[in-house]
Image (cartoon, rainbow, N blue to C red; front, top):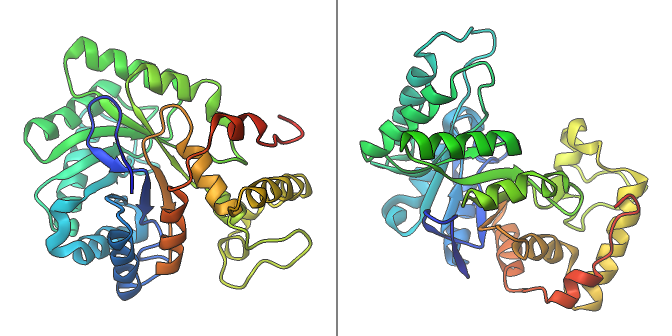
Length: 311
């Protein structure tokens, strides 16, 4: 598995990372361990989780599954936001982040977090308070690098400027939803992140499974699939998207690949992308996601890639 630096100051991470959002929600501890072991066998070194995944079980399952191999990998996790309905008062973000970090360290069974994300920006809170607290964790050695997730271009620019002005730890990565079916971040967020020296970490690269090849227009969603279980994600299963998926499938097939491989390889070929986060519930899914990293799209491939009708 190829590796890349996470931004200009972060650690080296595998081009495909394992998203652990299913742990504790869709799979139990035993199944999570099987997925983690398959990832390690495939050369994946980037493991992404969050305090909120599975009510904390995702971190627990990941830490237990890694065991003695913890030092071989980069663990990224995310701090939960301030509880809804709890008004912002000075100091509340600091308390939330510090407490969240301690809980994550305990659940993961480790003495440091390699990449610690602010999962969601607290728009009513103090950016200075959040960033100074994250810097405090870096100086204490409990966090090695800090990052942000689900941010706008303006928020990236504001935080980069603050880090430079106050000489606190700058965000090394931005984790954002990005796929062939959702390209909204390309206009503003990607350029802002690249300018700030941040590595981009796309999540939902398969558009909740629509780019996996297991769904077909006019056919019922497979039992147990994400789209069958979550109507929110099923909103993307439109006739227009399925028509585009057919074009992408044909493009990949002509080159001896699957649409899943195209979805991941295309993201890996985009400017600024350090690691593509792909979730899995079974070892064979991990193997398929990891294999996609071997396909390096050529400039001709990228130029001739079909574009959606609205694009």
